Image (tube, rainbow, N blue to C red; front, side):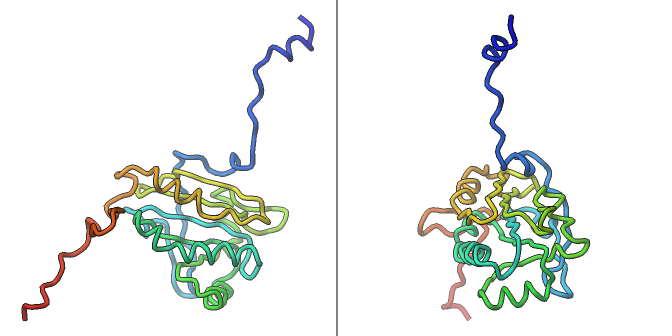
Length: 201
């Protein structure tokens, strides 16, 4: 058999794409402890028992990042229907994050992967060595701390939220955790308190 014949008979090699550089579904999410303000830390364990949408992005104040985070900010209630919390991570410092969040009216934590620079981004395979910034990467982590979905977007492209929503919809009740909410209109969340009787003193 010639080399050419052998090459023809071999199965097609797998097509590698950028998504495969991230942690894959089924991986344990690396722990982290990062500043959300100059004097407050946020840890992965803070979200135990509920899903987490983890958004890595290159930098505050850049046009694509601003639009991307503004979109997720608008969709927080939709994420909450699954009991999911939203967190952003970049290598900017906490003071920069604070100014950026105030300017863009963001109502979810932005964590500073500032020192050691990019340590958490590296742990999630979401660090751009060539630029010294985080990648534009998305993760959905389930209530038990397991990665269930990841996506690496081209640095200049807003990945939107369709992939996040689809990943949350695929989570099982166990993966959603105790904070799962009913998605049917008019049905109260399963963990909601009983309505108060205003006629009683």
